[in-house]
Image 1: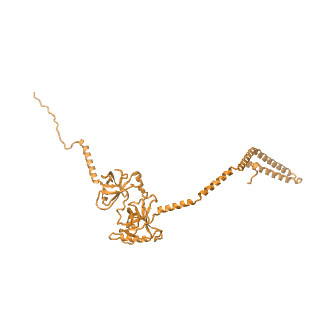
Image 2: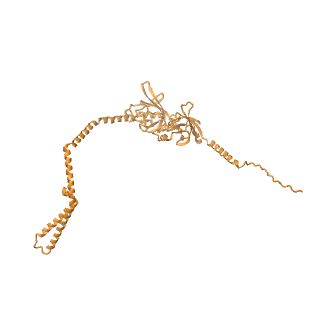
Length: 435
């Protein structure tokens, strides 16, 4: 028997270039990672190293970097230098602000030391310090030296002119970077403070170097020098002002507790009439020296304190105390006198007797007043009846109308007495008082 052979179904295998949906997740993850990497490269900031004398509370990922109050980066790490003498802070600066990283750029810590004249530095007590960047000029740079306070010279200022001040006494806490003010306006900064011994005179003082900014001195009517040398112009200005009494002195803002600064001002008219000798602008080692005057803050306070103490010493405190003690002794003697005690006892007895009398009389006032009013009413009735009787024949009784008038007046007086006693029952004891 022959029959047709059954046909077998065969599977056909087709190969596709698509790896399958199972690979979609890792491919997507790879794409996202690549995109983030490219974005990081495009927006990557600049890493710079700033060296400080101390960390002053700086912390990685917590201390920010600001430029004119705007955050432009943060500290990524804080570590000691290899020699262990200083601290290196690694900063991550935003890419958009990379252009300001020049050789003349300066970094300083705001809040490393609390400054009472700068309220913004007070927040560092809780939040820690922040690093402030002051842009400067020059070639691009990535390594900088930082300070614990505002830099002595503002990088954006123009040409500066150097001067010196020799203070006869100690300069206190005056530091580099402190303000130099002329009549309250900031016109420069302190660039150096050091001891100075004058071998010619044998005196020991403090030599302070300052830099004045001509653009802040308010000089008008003079063209800016083409060569940028303001020295002749500023020297001429200071020579005239020193002759008029311009002096340099130490000051504090706020007084006594604030940071030290150098203050330039005309002292009481100048020309030697201010209590300070006349002076001129002299030069030492090629640097003009501005004459100084004693600081008025501590001197005046000390003088006033001495004056107050002198006035207190002059007060008759002991004599006044002796008089007070004498008066107190007399009062004690009077209060202990037998006559005084007897008089007070007599007054107490009299007052007590009056109170008892009033207590005895008061319950009788009501019936007495009622009886008086009843008597007054009876007198009124009698007068009324008599008037009716007289109405018939009054010619034979000439004296009776006068008697009736007296009776009417008596009734009125009795009624007034009753009203008064009703209001003032104590009158029975003390008598009638003037209304």
